[in-house]
Image (tube, rainbow, N blue to C red; front, side, top):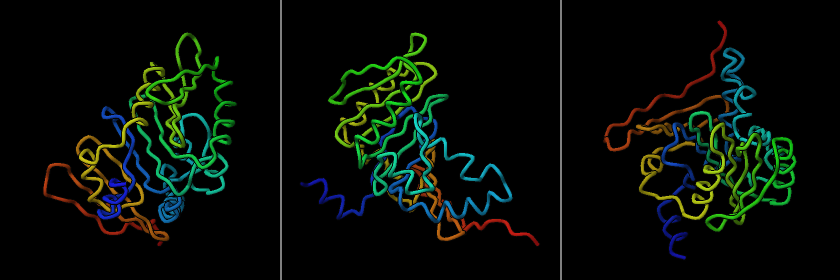
Length: 231
């Protein structure tokens, strides 16, 4: 009872579940609060294809296709749109942790996809159930689930170890001390790199970013960025 009380008093956002060795972490505190950023990138994408949501939205989940720009796609995948999501990139490997609204729906979609990736299997680790697909003698993809918390992985090297590590993430609450920079930067989406955190927030067709460098009192803040317009 104490943890939820402290969180409400501190106004804490949902913290990421992500491995410490990740090269890049993308954290979304609430999936249903991305409309402003999506609108901005839609507009900016008319002039720069790399910014189009259609270019990068497939990166959201390592196993199934989920369009985070469409609420019906999120809900149809069994994912809770009112909860957070965290994407971790580790070289060529990916891990996405979310909260489920409909466990059966999610597992049905993911199991079908895993069946096309290799031989399916299931086991347990750290209180979580692991489901994976093995192809060519290695685990290529899978997910760890505990209650409504789930972390899905895809790997070009060692998916089995990633799944066990994902189970550990679900077993232990995120350490707030690790995410002090994130908690001090407002945003509806965060990019967390080794030495700094970028918070992005959007309103209609504008986007504002702010940078916090952990361990340093200095902060860099940018004015609202607007999609380019033709003259």
